[in-house]
Every structure is written in structure tokens, then in C-alpha cells.
Amino acid sequence: MTEVLDLATLFQINAWIYLLMSLATWWVLGRPVQWSARVWCLAGVMAGISVWLISLRGVIDDVWTYLVAQPMLLASYLLYAQALRLDRGRGWSWRWLLGWLILYAWAIAFWLDEPKSWGLAMLVRSANSVALMLLTIAAVALARHERSRNAYFIVAGFSLFTTSMLLNAWMTWHGQSVLYDLQQGVLNHVMGVVSVLTLVMIYIGYLGMALERAQQINSQLRQAQWRTRLWREQAQALILLDRQRTLTVLANSLGHGIVQPLTATRLNVELVGWMTQSGADLKEVGLLLQQVIDGLQRSAALIERIRGFLRPASSLTSTVHLQSVMQDAQDLLREELMYRGIDMHLQMPAQPVRVHAESLALTQALVQVIRNAMDALQNQSERRITLDLSIQGQEAWVRVVDSGPGFPAHMRIQAPVGAQISADWQGGVGLYITQGILSQFQGRLLLDNLSSGGASVTLILPLIEADQS
Image 1 (cartoon, rainbow, N blue to C red):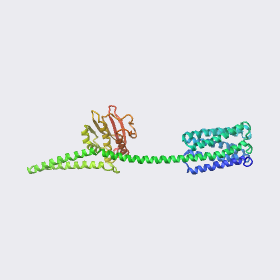
Image 2: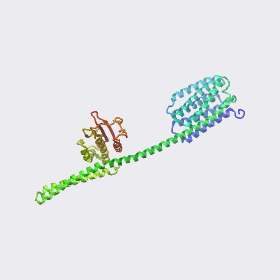
Image 3: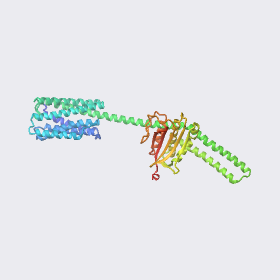
Image 4: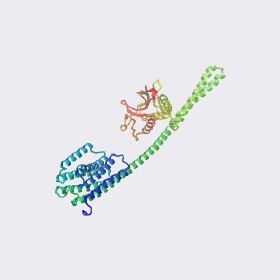
């Protein structure tokens, strides 16, 4: 084989393979964004150029074949290793790499006057052997990390290349392998052929590993899309289930809201009829008629609030007075609070507290929190809920405090950017819904356990700009 194909030709074939495979990798990966892939392609280009310069040893000046080509070849090996390490997020320091390359170039420059010396040959092959061992170690670490057959294909290629380089260094140590003369040494030809085979193995393995990664990313994206769709479907089902659950409460409120005003209206109408027949003062009759009108309006307003509560939430936002939201929530739950024997107190400032949101959605969110507090008071001797509205800086805080046992220990309390709620807790559904509603209006949920006992849930919303003075 040494008579048919000399070592210089083998080196030139290697150089073309390095260049073509690097360009092909760049093209297949579609101008890769990852630094690891860019460094890998750069290493291939540098290896191709350096091997081509080495193939011209004896034809061009030794400065190019030694002082330029050998440090560039060592740099390509180290860059291959750096690319594999970057894939694991454990790259070397670039200053460290540059420092070793400068030191290596300086050592070659020291031996440049004697290009055929044994010392220069040992320096070059020892440095290349160490770099290839580091490269093989990086490939093994990546293969263990990726658990990919293609990664182990890369390991096999670099292991074979490293073994041939170590054997060549051992032969040089014993004076049986010449560095300068490319036409001599059967072992040099063997190493050239091995490098061609290993190059093909390495790049096939790298492209296969890149394809596996792309498939994994696509699979993860599909799974994420499926989970997102499933979460939305479950969220809609939970909202519908919770609304159905509140129908009993709303029916009680609706019955109370209609029967009580209509009973009072009937009595007032009968009283007006009796006063008219008895010739009573028309002014007093007018007052009674006004009470009749007020009662009918209260019934109509309550029915409209309940109907609105059951309608799908509107996407239109407006200026909302939180005092009205708190009052509506109390009205909706008044009957259930009475049946359960729970006292609820409202504490609100006199001045209006306004936010930019949707009234019905906020009412629903507050009702969810109050109902969770009511559930927590089932087995408590003291049953008390307090709603407190306050202004903290540029935010409005609606705090719901109960006298229950507090939140379970496994829940994350006092989350600064929103409650992280455990789904296995009985109140998790309501709090999930509340958090989702608040997030639509740049709000958040704050959970806390009181030192005196009981739980605190705070609905936080940004004030409108006019009130942020």
C-alpha cells in the first residue's frame, strides 16, 4: 500500500474529509445556534487546514508545516473536546486553552532549527496523544450523559485514533517512527488509513446524535403541547364543575333574594290598598310605593348578578370598585354562611379602591377563596371569616382570614410571585381557579398561616394609575 498511496496523499485525503464533513455538518444542522456545534465545525475546518499544511512538509517552509500547522492541529483536537464538553455544560476555560497553545507553539519554535530531531518528534506526538486522550475522555463522558448509541460511535472512533497516536508516539520514543519524512514508516501509513476510517465514524456518529437530539426536542414539544391542551381542558372542566357545585348556594341565595323582597312588596301593596280605602295621606302612600319599587329593584339586581356569575367570563375589562366586589360576594354566599353558622365581617376603607379588571371574574375569584375558607371551618368551634381591603403601595390587597387550622405543611406559603398550590389539597381546585383569574389582570395570590392560628389568602391587584399616588 505504501507504494501505491504515499503518506502525503493520505494526509491530503484526510484534510478534504475534515473540511467536507465539517461543511456538511454545518449545512445539515442548518447554521447551528448552539455554541457546541459551531465549535465542532470550527475544529474540523482547523484540522483540515493543518493536515493539508502537514502534507506539504518538505515542499513549503517548515514554519508553515510546524509552527503553524502543529499548533493548529492540537487546537482542533482540543476544540473537538471542548465542543463535547459544552454539550454537557462543562466547557474548559478559553484562556486556559489559549495559554497551552501559546506554550506549545513556543516549544515548537524552540526546536524549529532542528526539524528532524527526536525531541521535536516526541514533543509533537506526545502533545497530540494527550489532546486525543482528553478528547476521548470527553466523548465517553458525553456518551454516558446522552445514553446514545451514536455517542458511543464517536467514542469508538476517537478511541481508535488515540490508540494509533499512542502507538506512533511509542515507536517514536524507540526511534522507529520519523516525523519529518512523510514517505517513510509503515506505521505512519497505518495511522493515515486509520484516521480516514475514524473520521467517517466520528462525523456519522455526531450527525446521528444531532438527529436524535432534534427528534427528542420535537417529541418534548409535542408532549408540551399535549399537556397544555390537556391542562386547558381540565381547567375548563374544573371551572364548570365548580360552577355546578355553587348552583345549590346560588339557588338558596336566589330564593332568599326573591322571596323576602316579594313578601315585603306584597305586604306593602296590601298596606297601600288599605290606606287608599281609608283615605290616608298620599305622601305616606308614596313612601310605601317607593319601598315597593326598591324591593323589586333589589330582586332584579340580585337575579342579574347570579345570571352574570353563571355566564362565561367576558374578556372586556373596566374600572372595578373592589368594595362592590366584596359586597357582591357576601350577598351571593349570605345564605350558606347563615346555614353553616359562620360569621363574616367586612373591613373596607371609605375611599373607593379601584382596579382595572372584570367585575364578574373578580367576584368569582373571591367567592372561590371564601368558599375554601368556609370548608376549612367545618370542624371548628369558632367559625369566623374576615374580609379586609387595604392599599399597599401601588397595589390593592383583599385579604380573606379564617379561624380554621391553616394550610397543610406541604403547601408553599408566602410565595412572592404567586402561590404554588399542591393539587392534592382539597382547596387546591378553588385556589388554582383564583390564581388563573388574577393572572389575567396582572394580579397574584399570597398564602400565609397566621401565628395566632388560621389561614390568610390575599388577592393582590395593581391599582389604576390615577390611584397610585
